[in-house]
Figure 1 (cartoon, one colour):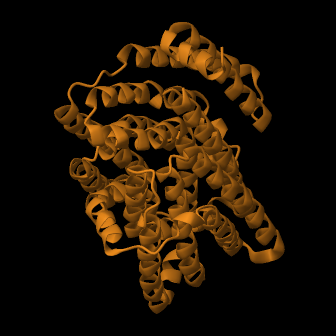
Figure 2 (spheres, rainbow, N blue to C red; figure 1 turned 30 degrees about the vertical axis):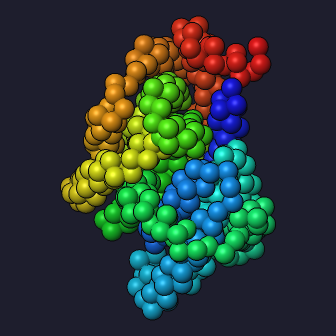
Figure 3 (cartoon, rainbow, N blue to C red; figure 1 turned 120 degrees about the horizontal axis):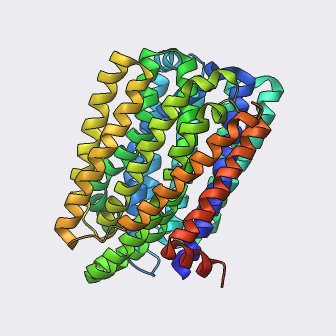
Length: 467
């Protein structure tokens, strides 16, 4: 019950955070158009690729801190390594500042360095809370940062900073909440010893590819698209990806919540209980993604028009990306379990298969068919990710009880929802309010049908509301 409520609290935090993130995307799209959003997206893509090595350290920090209730030096050790790496990368970026500005189509290289440092500190603060099994706190800290980011970006943009204002506002919010997080975790700011660094190294040597996988999933498309297509298509693609990612929040919250518990089970080799947790995760992994894909088939163009009319061109891309996110959500439950049970070397192989597929197909298909190639590359590589992760986990812990009947109910409810929404479209004007009404209608129809069909989902909902 505690785990369920933690997942719900984390999910609620992620929803609020995503709504604030949507506000940022809407601000950029409305104020600067798809091209301006494309420039900001490329800044973020470069940021996340530059900070890649620190991602493996933050994952190792969460893992090592979750293994004991005692205060250790792992948090401080990870922070030292991340900041040392940040200084090194910052020097390189300053050295090649003109080339970086040329790729970004903006004078943003100097801000990128400070954004990198602030982002790494904030990431490590959140990983510290996850390691302490305070997952909801981590989620709400991220939400507060996103809300302040939107407010800061709005202030800088309206103050005349233009697209650079989006970057400056981002930097300001990360700095504020990174410092707040360090204050809250001050008892973990100890002097680390060599053993703490070695513990992180032993886990990070495998987990770095898992972070590379997540980075490739989110930002490889944008990085490659920036080389082959214009800023406008990059902006539309990023808006579509943002919507698809919003639907994946349930799966992400479940995975984050289960990780420290799986870590405990892995220590005792209680694989029967671990398989049960995986089944619960799979039950809810597609609960929003599956209806989201069917909904996008019907009103995807209308939803994208919320940004502006030029974004409707990404309707087909949106459907493909939601499908890719759905496949990845199921695969991520398997990989999260492998990591939690302390099989980082196996998760490494899974992520290697994904990354090799993703990067090769991105360059090939984007070159051949443009932005549709990026979307199909993501779908193909997530399919490989799901297949390989299921095979590897099954080999280690035994057969996984996949809730096929419940997933089937989700598909049936989604089809019925899409049919109802489609039948109402001729009577709805083409504006934002009508689109929102269609979304709420679809959600109501889907929710009612799935609660009638699925006893497991109905029981879980009743438990969470305290009935």
